[in-house]
Image 1: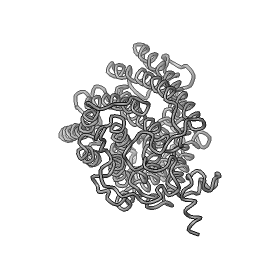
Image 2: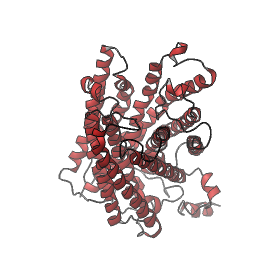
Image 3: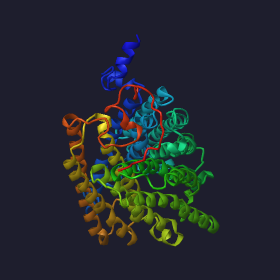
Image 4: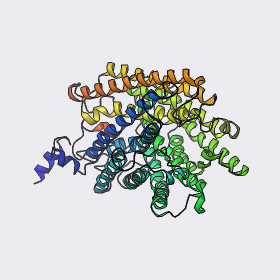
Length: 534
């Protein structure tokens, strides 16, 4: 009996109980991570196509390819898919699930069945969101924020979309709980808190936000459903409700959620930079504590979304100061990453290119965030395309590019083959040029006063929108070429060794792809994961 178990342990996790049913009932964290990856990739592609359609409509003033109501629906669905189905779950659900147990020397997460349940909830929530395309009274037209009182009064299918976000919240909570317990209980012998990889630190900080902040949005979304179905009047001024209350409740969750989106991406950066600069990470403890600081202070800055809502003067000043404070730990990370690169033996390859792009684009997003955190400038650019550009530089230019960097970095570990470097580099440059061509002109348009969320615009903003739409085409071509290269590499790429990068963290000390239980023998950790000598 023991011999048969041992023989199974030495097989790749791909080869044990193959078949679709066995995959979707597996509790192996690696398979669940891949289930998330394939699901998220499909929904992300849908979101990208919707975004390209929006840019085509905005190519010229007036109607181009769709009516205003259709645009509003596509705009809402694009936001819901990108935020709730890609950005929030992307790095934690895919690489957290696949890599985190490996990187801390564990055989699996603490609660494998709850982990599988999290994926099922994700898929159910996603299907609820996409079902608004075919069921009910039309695609919701509220935007992804579901602002009341319009979300209470509109005749479109808001209830189904809100329930989708509610179910996705449960998935996020369960994932966060699983990660917290796993990191506390299942670290390898000798792996103290300050010998733990920084990617695990970022997931740990993120998990606390998922656990504590997500219930707030769940309750808020149920309040919308209750108001739409029962007419309670929580947010409807005609019934004594207060729509500003909805904004407070929404952003109490949604600003910490920004850090659910970006903290794991920062953890990816902290893993990749030391490997390809062959240097010990500069300021390990500062980066680790800055993750916790971002998670903590992030709870107190939601009010900067509401400076023009009639908030009192003292409250606006306090929220503005807190917004500037939360930028400090992010600045600490960027300083430490650049200091790690300084005098390093740097290897420029696709994972490193995506990470360098992350730093560049996240800095633009962060610095423009200070513009929005300052009272005087926020009043001028509030609800303009300046906010759209800032948000996409942080979320897509930051988290999205870190996701692609993580995908190229851990590709050999996941699929056992190397990515075609030349094709991956070409795809990167298309995406980098396309992204900046798409979004940077929107900063200028926003400063000039172009309002966001509108189907149409004034003729003086035409040139900015032409450039932006051309950028979306370049970005889309790069995205398609990246998908093509990854698919080809997964099937026909050069076979990868267990540790093609000569990295020191534990996930690279086992087979590629990993065996069923990750390690033949649980490793004993004697030094940190970044002690590079060459």
